[in-house]
Image (cartoon, rainbow, N blue to C red; front, side, top):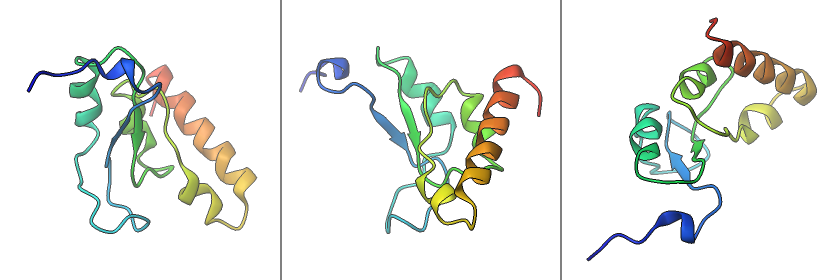
Length: 99
């Protein structure tokens, strides 16, 4: 069966799971390197999903991930605004090459 062009069907394909997550039982762990491998085969920006935290978001960003949903990591805190600021700081740091 031939491959169909993914970009004909989705705007932002989810790629994951990056890390273990408690929100999806049985979620297959693939790791951040999957984002890098998938990128060569698609022509739309992938979205890395699964278990992304403030402590590991840099690993995902360094693969070139276009976006990282962090719903659980932000909403399960006492201060979602502060959690989001921490994520943005970590993302900016990873994009600039600093860690």
